Image (cartoon, rainbow, N blue to C red):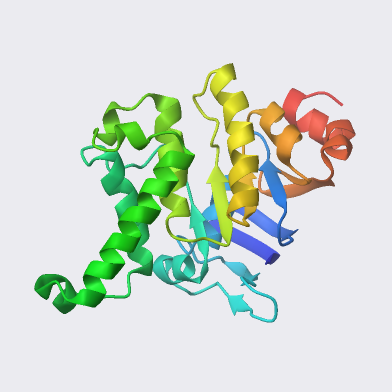
Length: 256
């Protein structure tokens, strides 16, 4: 589904990512790990069009037989193709209600125009009702239906994480990028998150690419893992292979 070829990203004299190659196959959960400053979020920013890489190409295939080159596309176009992400630092609309945050995710797929909205034409009202039903379904899936009218900022941290993922799901993604979804969670919330990610992957037919510092999350749910260190790929393979890799141990522990 996603192919990254020779990805290099330079900021002046700093090389954040160097000749990175990776593949994410349809239906997989793939992890991207590495010490702080390894270049992980830079990879996500390039995939989603926030940065244009210095070199390299990214190909996205949302469906069999369909391919799109992502480099040079704007973030909104990439999202329309079926790639959505969450962020390390939660980016909800805190003063809006829980339900309104889900509505915003749905707007990416809105077919009606402003004219239809102002005049409340039948096509718009039908679409509005469809969006409401879909949003309520997503809130039920994450256990927040009873909080739909509460401000997003009033939710406990773990619930805000779930809401952010539900908002991403509202865009109907094919590929979901999760940037440290377990950041700031306690052990119970982390265990619940593992089950939640596995559940939404199956129900919504997702492919997932995630960055995570919690090794228990990565090792539990990833089928394949890529390891970056100072912008360079130092290992790839199954969770077991990565755990035993001497370069990975050295990068994390500073010992050979």
